[in-house]
Length: 384
Image (cartoon, rainbow, N blue to C red; front, side, top):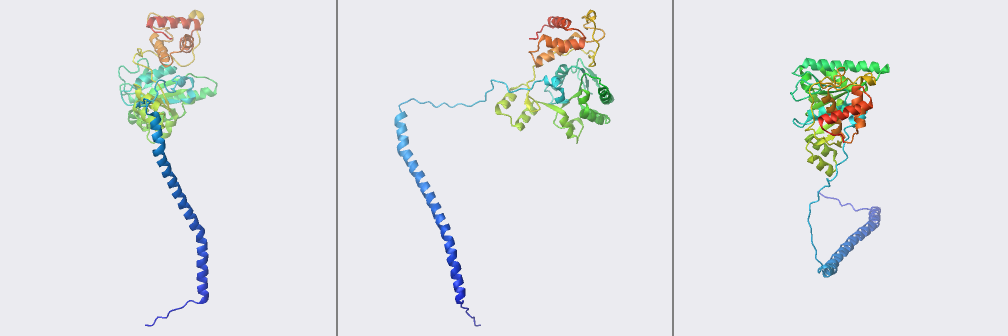
């Protein structure tokens, strides 16, 4: 087989040479820039090397010569966060003073962290009409408050929640008519069990959580976990927005880590006997070990009461009540005062008389101050 060799034409040769020449011209500046960059790197490397040699050969020997005669000590110490001062703490009195910001409250903690005691103390601060709905009650729990559903009476739990919903809508109508109401504050505990045994309570509870704020009805829920499913309200995560969350113990520390709070704040929390965070702010739980729980008495109504004339100011009776009409025990009044003072020891006698004694006893300021002095003498504690 014979192969033919094709010889390029003159024009083709000229075209190739022309393209090659132009390509070389284009590449020359690029090659020059590359060479310059390499020279710059070489000069930088050389200058760095020369600087290192100069430092080792001249600077270090000079420093040793000058400072060798002076005594030197190296002190190694672990840097600890400054815990001398407390972080900016949540003010518990805001729950009452700024109620619109805190329509409902939920307390989250493991068993044994004092959820019940904290809820009892909060009730004493919040005032108004107060009661508890729970099917499970220990003899030492909720003394001084009416309890609905104790003894695993799930039907009574459901009926009370239904009555709260009915009261809520009744109050809406009365507000439109110009009537003002006092607050109703109640605790709901063991609600996963209640809803399991009395499913009709679920929808009533949802309505109360959602719209009760404008009717001045506030719920304090107690749970051992973050999700509303703990209360048997699976799939209702939007209800969490209606609550201000109080986290205690490990829940508080884990939440602080999630928020990436400063290390000193985290260390302060860890040093607390009962670490606590209200929403995103650290809080200090007062020492409630000596918090007096009073014998069961009828609670004072939150609705306005007509004031007595000066001649009818309530007098302490031998049975320990200020008046047969109000059925408010001395122990209950003093427990409320203790709750306020544990939260804010700086409260004055005038404030206590005006905000605790006068509304509940329907008396004037002078008589309220006299009663406060009698209570302090009887129970042996000071307000300041």
